[in-house]
Length: 100
Image (cartoon, rainbow, N blue to C red; front, side, top):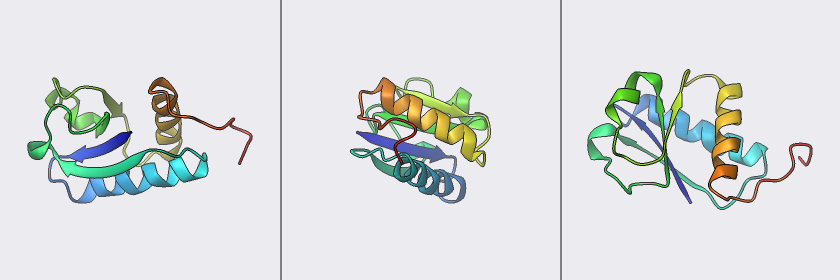
């Protein structure tokens, strides 16, 4: 399973979201997910199982497959919820919330 954080340049915000997704996966004990980041121009359909983008790029990612739009790229609570929901939806084994 691959999650890809995407921003317009592939540097600052996508790298931050990439690191935060890894942090959330570790916190929640979710394994089997590879995380990477990229710029919008280099991402095509099939680049990842799920693409995470900020709301500013929501209109630019049509046709890229399964896209999760983050209302705020710095809101860890939102990211925790969306990563967990996405992992479950994709069939990744997710430990019970209380099992840390």
